[in-house]
Image (cartoon, rainbow, N blue to C red; front, side, top):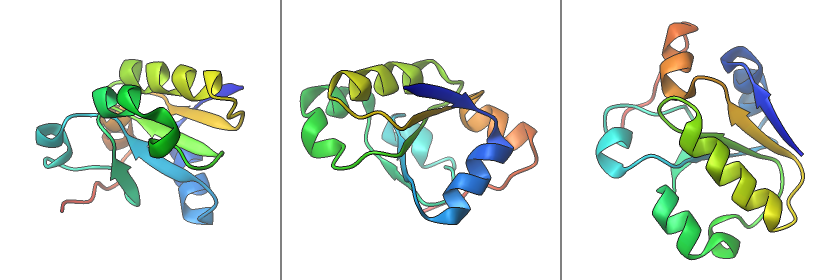
Length: 104
């Protein structure tokens, strides 16, 4: 099941260390800043080999606004994963909530 979660709820899940944070944006978007502890798996790459890109359940999907991450979550759901989270508002919502981005 896919749950849309607020940036604050996502932050708590991420801090617990019990979720995989997957950012499905493009590398140029990623380089501007990303949610802490996220790993970059562009949506096209995820579509090409979802089983390799998603080795476990309990995944928080992130994009810029929330649309691509929902697409990714639906793909993961079709693979049989069932603890899936979509970050409401994406990185834009994260920043609006006053949460910091990482730069790498």
